[in-house]
Length: 124
Image (cartoon, rainbow, N blue to C red; front, side, top):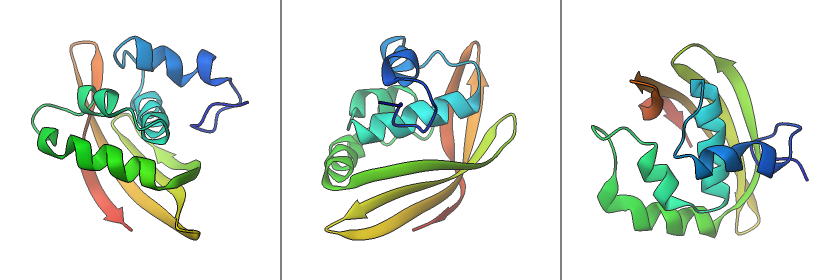
């Protein structure tokens, strides 16, 4: 089975590596893909760890995990990537109704680690 993030690699050779190494990705897109897989797996610890401390929604962790578990994730579609932004569509279904999150995510690299900073545009 291919990784949840949509690459042609198995999860074990793709996002699991980042889930186990604390998010040590080489690019913002790799971090975005690994965060999508973390949503699929409802891995709240990873989502918090890879969210920049200045915008990290620590108090919302449980709600985020509960929401991630309440939907069926369909696919991740990367639309455009720059050095520190990733525009994507995350397709999911809730109670049989298809939906999509469109986001232009901002990332920041501190020392050697990339972090999710927030979004420039978000459409639900």
